[in-house]
Image (cartoon, rainbow over all chains, first blue to last red):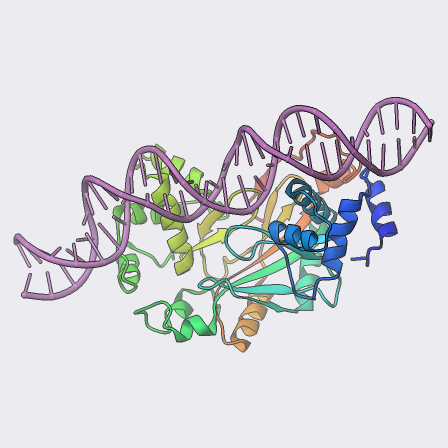
Length: 167
Length: 167
DNA sequence: CCCAACAAGATAATCATTCTCAATTAATCA
DNA sequence: TGATTAATTGAGAATGATTATCTTGTTGGG
């Protein structure tokens, strides 16, 4: 949302009764310097910090990352199997969604502003406050399709099962 | 209305080198008889089956549910913290999305056809094949807002957890 | 600069999910 | 139809991400 500096982060935290700590600052810094489109798991974040000579315990990583997600500073992504990823929560026009292949977990980002708009309308109608909206599109990627996924099936199988509305 | 019978399920499975088993049939049956909008975790599914006098091991539950999600028969939902939920993958116009409160995990469904349309367009543009698209909107529910989220919340207060069924 | 509350670090605990393996069983083909 | 083969089940152990606990260290308001 806001490009956070140490000061604005502190203000945000304090206004909720939480504190600015060197650890939280460093964690935010890592995400801010991440190439756009990258996301880290808790462990990857720990390694990154270690390499920078700023080791932070896994406990703190998990706590901070969850806190910042609840605040709306980070996005919690459920893309691949097994563990969560986090990325900086960027405002329009960098807000994006994900396409994930069920075969290989390949992830592709895409932008679509109207999805955010529609979510906002929906949410406000119900009296909720929007923090984030993530469209996760489950797919079969072109490579998997080329390899004959799913084996032995007519190539149009998925289309008939899939939720496409006019086909 | 639900396209799967024992026969079509068998055909679908066999075409991929998999088998129709009584367990898989029973599991599908549970989902088909679930009120619209309901979703079950692996454990809830096991309990349901137990109550019906058709106990199935947890291992098998997990395996089957994952298989059927990969096939596009079930949707795998990442709504609340900690565990996945599954629901029947229904075609348009029953396809829906979810709004989740980060404070209490309350879940509200909503319909929005244009999200599906746009996903489909996006996916095809990239040469992928669409299996499912789920918009998960992270929110603060009205109840939490009323209590002064985020700072004014009594430490052990939780919003009433209601899984409302329709908009 | 003091103190109460909050946070960090280390590690144990939890808990959903996956894996292992022996025993069964569904689908195929002779 | 019955043998054959490979998939599947069930039970429980193993895994692995995330949380909780507990002690010590810090933050920030008075």
